[in-house]
Image (cartoon, rainbow, N blue to C red; front, side, top):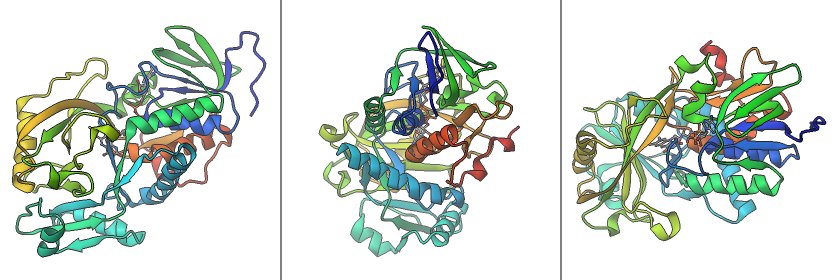
Length: 391
Ligand SMILES: Cc1cc2nc3c(=O)[nH]c(=O)nc-3n(C[C@H](O)[C@H](O)[C@H](O)COP(=O)(O)OP(=O)(O)OC[C@H]3O[C@@H](n4cnc5c(N)ncnc54)[C@H](O)[C@@H]3O)c2cc1C
C-alpha cells in the first residue's frame, strides 16, 4: 500500500487508535512492512488507567474459555519469542501454571479438553506430588490439581514499550497525550479528529480498549467496561513464594463465582513494582465509565482476597502491600472482536472486547490487525471472533 499525496502531510496509510496492548503490537506489525503508520494514544505509553498495567499477565495454552483460541496462542507464543529475539529483552517468563478446582467443575473439564485436543502438556498432580513440588498450597477434598508446565507470564508494560520502540524504529509516528474525539468516513478515506488536530488515512485500526464503545456507537451496548481489583501481598516468609520456587496459579473456589489467579513474588530490580505476591479475582466487576472509575479498593474486596489466600495458600498473607484497579471490556460471550467494522468497506478494523483475558494474545492480534489492514484478510483462524455475532 502506498500513501496518497496530501499537501498537508497529514495523510497516513493506517492510523491506530489507542496505543496500549493491542495498538502497540499493531503499530509494530504495520510499520515493519513499510507502510506509513500513525499511532495515537490519549495518555502516556504505558499508563495505569486502562487494561494493561500491573507488571504481569498470565499466558497459558489449555484454553478453558474456548478451544479455538489455542492455534492463536501457538502463534502468540512464537510472536513473543520474535519480539524477544529482535530486541534481546525477555518478556515471557516460564513458571508453570497450577490449575486447582473441583474435579467435576466445568473449568477443569474444559482445561482437560483443550489440552487433549491440541496435545498441550498437562500433568495431573496427586496430593503427595503437589506437597513435594509446591507445599505452599492446601487443596480441599474433592479438588484436583493440574500443572501446565509451559505456561507463565508476560510483562505487559515492557512488551508495549518494546513494540512501540520497534514501531518507531521502522518509521511509525507515535503521538501521546492526544485524545481522539471522532472518526469519519469520507469519499477518500477516514478522517480522524483529535484534541490537537485532524489526520486522514486509508484505514484505521481501532484498539481503544475500555474506550472502544465511545468511538463505536453501534457496538457500545455490547462492550461493558468493568472495574477489577488487583492486590500485592507480603507473605509470611518470602523464600517459598519467590520467582523460581513458586508457579503462577488459577484456583476455582467452589463457593465463589469465577476464579482467582496469582503470580510468584517478582524481584523489583527486574520487574519493577509494586513489591509483593500479586493476585486478582477474575469475576464480574462493577460496570463503570472508563473516564470516571472509582480507583479506591474497598475493604470487602481486599478481605475476599485475603480469605481466599488463607484457605488455599496459607502462609501467603501477612500484610497488604498495594491495591489497584484495572479495567475489563466485556463482550456478551466474553470472546474478543477481531474484524472489519460492517458498512465501512473494510476501511475500519476493530480489535476490542478482550473480556479480561486478552494480553497474552497482543503479539498475534498485532499481526492479525496488520494482515486485515494491508491484505484485507488473514490466514490466522479468527472466524469465531467476528463482529457479526453481535450486530
Ligand atoms: C486486573 C486485570 C488482570 C488481567 N490479567 C490478564 C492475564 O493474566 N492474562 C491476560 O492475557 N490478560 C489479562 N488481562 C486482560 C488484558 O490486560 C487486556 O485484555 C488487554 O490489556 C486489553 O488490551 P487493549 O489494547 O484492548 O486495552 P489497553 O491496553 O487499555 O489499550 C487501549 C488504549 O487505547 C487508548 N485510547 C482509548 N481511547 C482513546 C482515544 N479516544 N484517543 C487516544 N487513545 C485512546 C487508551 O488510553 C489505552 O492506552 C487482565 C486485565 C486486567 C484489568
